[in-house]
Image 1 (cartoon, rainbow, N blue to C red):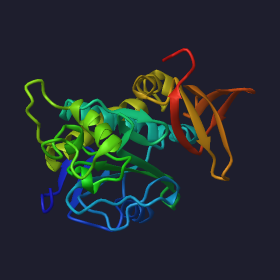
Image 2 (spheres, rainbow, N blue to C red):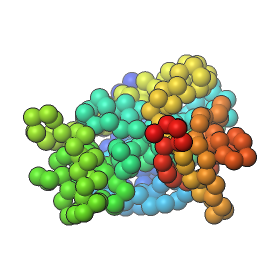
Image 3 (cartoon, rainbow, N blue to C red):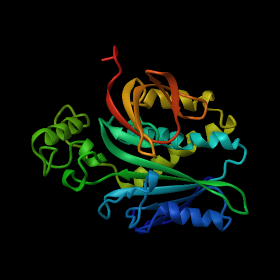
Image 4 (cartoon, helix red, strand yellow):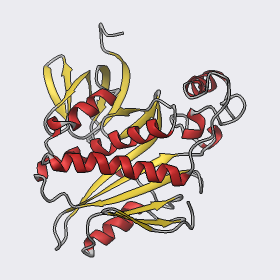
Length: 293
């Protein structure tokens, strides 16, 4: 992808750079300068990539894809913009399924998993400026990292397809290696051939296409999640039906069964005191809910 041409793709103005500090920061700066909706900035390397709660997102150069979209859904009520991270997640899963045989799922609110390992992270940030409100929707997708280049909780399209090395578990042994191999086996063909990961160009093209389809459908219904998006997310969400631990920003935690999403995209939890909702916090998948295993 590095050095590839920029292009106009319908409403999307796709711009490519080999590297940058952060695609989200760059696109937010464009939004503050009054840039129109539809700019897409893609990079194969971020020097200062960020995730939710200001966590860092880093990968070796040329192994992951960072993409940020400039959005101005001004015809959608502001309270429905909270669904944008979930919409992006659905689009990423759509793209992975179109490009590969890998089964990806969603972890509420902003992670894409293969098994229990993180394949992609999502960060949506709102920007207020004179031209009106905007949102920057960013995706960091692990594409070509080998197993030894990933944290223990991470995976990539290469590893998930079984292509890290001959065993699918380079640099690992014991339970961690077994877990990695189990995740890799999900993507290997029946004849034992190990597919190569898709090219960065293909990943970018399909991701833009799938995001555009989901975003335009959401806007056409005024952002009403029950028109389609909520059910699409529920079907892909591995958090629902799980017993989870919620770690709140103030360091409190609570446990319960994740049972649904509310109209604002918040996670509905059934605990000992009844139903409650989570709008912000880290979710840890513990086990299937009682009676569902």
